[in-house]
Length: 226
Length: 306
Image (cartoon, rainbow over all chains, first blue to last red):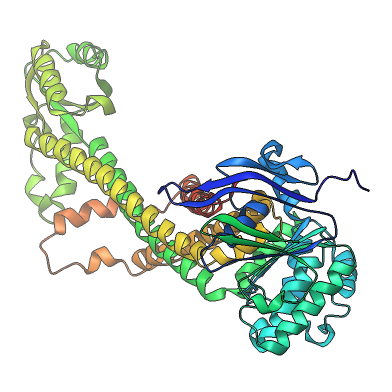
């Protein structure tokens, strides 16, 4: 177990855009399997860019990203969709499709992976267990509260049983009660083995918790609090 | 495939307004382009009819030996640009004249047909139907021994040549303009339609959808839209054609002094698009829609690495 490679590892990662804006400088850190790590820093510090690199919306300008010991630069573009299915993503704006029911929104993650109707139904049943969505499956996102919508987004992120969950300010649009609810769900998923990287600028979320906190400022790592 | 069809149809059912608007735009543009094409093929058919009715009349000398007639016939038939030669005897010519002046044919009752010289009616091959060729041929015919005079509608063939060139030019330029404007409007509508799906595309990419999984329904929807739109356009066009034929529109254009012109239409019928033409219209419409959808969707996918 000691020799197991980190689930996520960033090695001297830099990101420069075509307009010469430098979003990240020399970022290096790693996450062990089953770790729950906070990525924090003010708005515009580079947290979202790191997450975008991790779910392959962008490629680093230099440096390397390793997922389960596999270098991202060595992954063929045609294999990226398969790898994305192993990563669950949760966002501040939920990214739900308003013209689809809760069931259809969650099912989308399984449909793209090629699952059949019966498998989809059974996997959704398992995923919503403990998320309090059983009686909401036929509702549309606009009929749900913010907290409920985020639970749907979480259900969609975990329905494929991903080993990594990337959360980008998932509580940013929620009040205190819903925020605690989301934190509890993520804690529960972490206890079941998921590796979680949680980006937030709200320090109240990690204060007093025995979690690693990586602070980013102006695209550089300012501090790693073990 | 079943999943692709299901996803495509679900997309149409959940966003009926977008798809309805796209189908209307496709129908309208294909209707305008097809209507123009219908006019073009009918004008072409008219010009072919007018071409086929063109002939050169060669009059035989009155004192010519009757045995020389077959010789002249042979010489005329051997000319390169000649399609057919018909001998018109004085009797036949007189009968024709009687038919033309139906009401006053009594005037010709006592007339001896011999006052009309025998003649040959010469029809030209299609490629030879132009001013230069007909002039040249008329000269050659005039040089044949036994021919006294050659008549042909010089100004008529000149006008016909101009009309044909004008039809073709209008056809080509108009066709290109209509094709481009139809392509532009159809592609614009499809692009707007796809732009409204950016969020859906982004979410599907995040969830690990392959490009072909995302592109498939858009292509199929574009194909459905183009086939439906083109079918509606062809049906409307047939309706317009049917009402033109059944209401005999040409006979109602009496306010202009077009009697002679309208007589031409008595001999030809308005034609509708051939199955081959309809197939071409369907294929062009489908090509525009599918290609546009493919380009538009790829533009949105370009933001991703795969």
